[in-house]
Image (cartoon, rainbow, N blue to C red; front, side, top):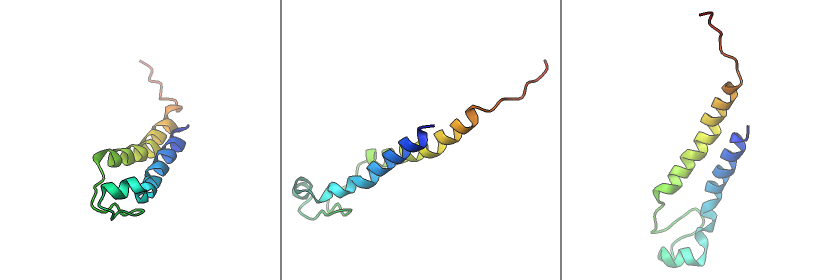
Length: 78
């Protein structure tokens, strides 16, 4: 049942990632117009969006599947 925790950790990493956009290296790369949560002239790549989708699926889909994993199925008398 670690799936919700893992999903929350990945999601918090995605949420905290833009806090580093005000660093000097990012400002030099993005024409000195970047700030926290404002990337300036740079763009976010597809990997960031895939990570967010993976975090959402880890929290929702995997948790839902884990809840039903322990239930007994009906026994059919064949």
